[in-house]
Image (tube, rainbow, N blue to C red; front, side, top):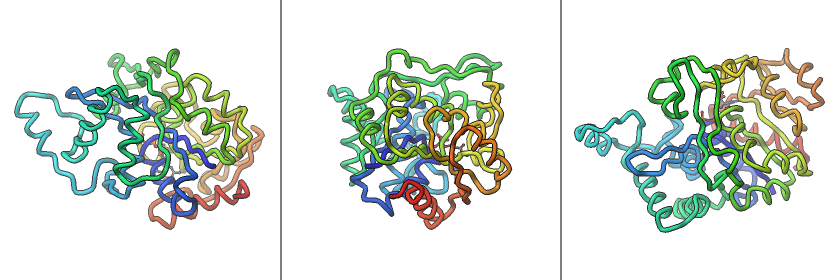
Length: 308
Ligand code: GDP
């Protein structure tokens, strides 16, 4: 069994390579829900949807999120009615949010609703939200405290980050299956995702970090930092705001209490020794995933390293 911890786009790209080389049924993906937000009465789970759409082959690959060929008529109409429409929701994408919200209203937990959505999309991979409980990432900035989506999408990550708050983390329990998957896996992959607001959130859910430490799996992370910077997204701003150095080393350092192997981009070779100094084995590779071949190649490197 293989378990992966995932955020959105970076993770989904890697996982779409992985499912070409391992049977979907053998893979469990634990997904960040700290980005979840309620808009127009609908429960939106951006990372769950990015992973599901990507693995189902319907994602808009240019954007990395949303559904290919989607239209935005509903949002235009909402704007006419005077609603704020800063969060891009396509018409087909909205159907997912309506469906999810209806399932939740019927009393299903988020993990059950996710299973239902994945089944309808024809997925056999087991996608689980990190928690069924309310857990929100809020960013403390020089312009005030705001929900992560407000910081990222509405304000374009332009505010200076002063801190990150995981609202609900004290009470959030791991969703059913999360701890079991971690403990029963031979391979645990930390996808190339934002270490603060995608992986950091998952690790802060009660018992998760401890289970990862205890797990006998081979634990591998792929660096989300290439040439000393994120490929996309605000990882650098968030890391800097928390007083962390923006580097691959810094990411490895965040995982040092459990990580066995770190896949470092070859462009950051200069950091190899420093990471090895943490007691972590370093594999150098080209980690930029543009084509399906790139993704498959990276997945094979991870599998080979753990003897799978
Ligand atoms: P988000 O929530 O949609 O931003 O997605 P994630 O948290 O999964 O991913 C954001 C991180 O993924 C950023 O730090 C990116 O640098 C990283 N990332 C995206 N594409 C790639 C890639 O092709 N290779 C590597 N190594 N990292 C990537």
